[in-house]
Image (tube, rainbow, N blue to C red; front, side, top):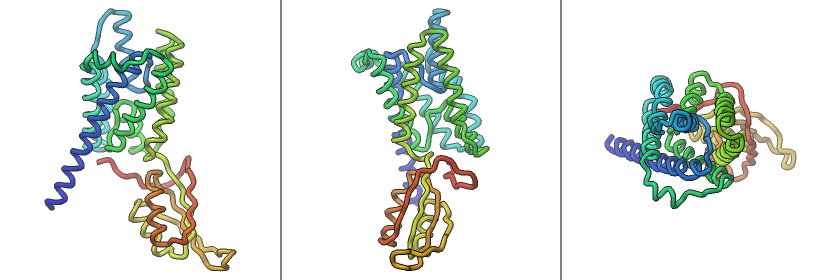
Length: 294
């Protein structure tokens, strides 16, 4: 019991450290690359920056970024706390809170030292750093808030992919930014978004899926590995290995992309002669186990 409590405490501390570091990186990115390139990121972060700039430009009123970010995230956070997961939402809120505070209060001298005054470089490298920050949140089982709250709530509650709707929302923000300020800056913001998406797909694979075709002569030993390692099931097909004229079993299973290498290595230990074909899966319909948010 004491060991379990220590493990739980250690896990919480680890998550807190990762989320705090992610918030620092995101705030630094907003104050350097994003600010220097006058880029509008997607989601509530971009919307908060856009509202802040509108008040400054048209009304000569300086509203703190953190205030706008907290207001925009309040309702989605409450919904996620109730329907998705309490700890997941709390750590996500810590990320949002620290990002807001650090963005507003980061020392100017530190910012000026790092800032790159080139819009294209700001868009590309800012997108990469943004993806790194978001990935760290996801590894800590949290999010950077904003539209991620909405997307995850819809995914958990209705088992639907909401990212296409989030993309449409981001496009509306960029169109609004282009009409108010500059089409050039909006186009650079698209490069920022594209870079973030591509980098995020490489850094974090938890939302991606892989299909495994495992040809083995030891299905009774291999299947428990699939079930116990990934919590996913498998379907068995009997067949004949034509070269050796030996009976074989093919196990078909779909797992998360961050589980396939670990599973393949475990299978090879049980059956060194197993033939494993791993394919990228773009879309599935039917029941698929998802680790619940805590």
